[in-house]
Image (cartoon, rainbow, N blue to C red; front, side):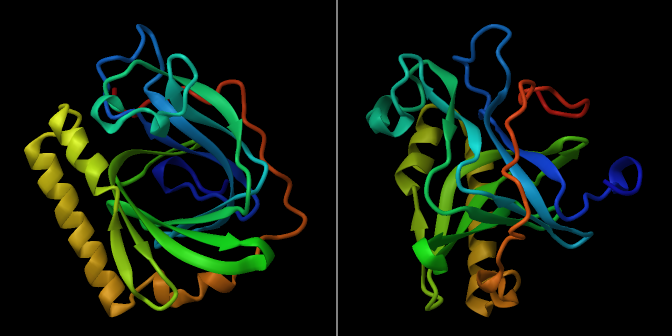
Length: 228
């Protein structure tokens, strides 16, 4: 990392953590960490305009699971966000993911490839603007997403989960309206084919010398300014 304080920047090849808080669920175990997703990544670029990171195939991550170990999406939607949860370590299989986040944007853009580096799509993940700390960045997922295809067509994703999160009280009406507005703003960027879609990131490739970042034992450590 170069620089000091909030202006510190990571150098290409630095290994950091890309994390998500758990939407303030009431069923968090006493003393449990508010972080429920943690993905070790390698920094591709870190400037005042953009943070780009690479999550390599085979990366050990932390993901939420139900208390009995069942995958979250195996739970019916009606109880998916109220059933007790915990976290589990798992390996990211398949192709890697390039993640792009502009400071202050309420979304990040992810790029997916199939085998042989055949580009599949962009994925707009609506979320809280990232909070930087010494070990990485933290955010909170907002359930609603957008898929953008190479022909520039797009579609909303997970609208049922977005509605259910509101129904069970994980998101109030004002927040939901703000998230929908953010999604519409992202759609305007897509329609204009603005950055990062126009910037050629689908042709990017990782440095072959990069090692897969390890998942540290203290992956859930709490930065000083992390919301509770």
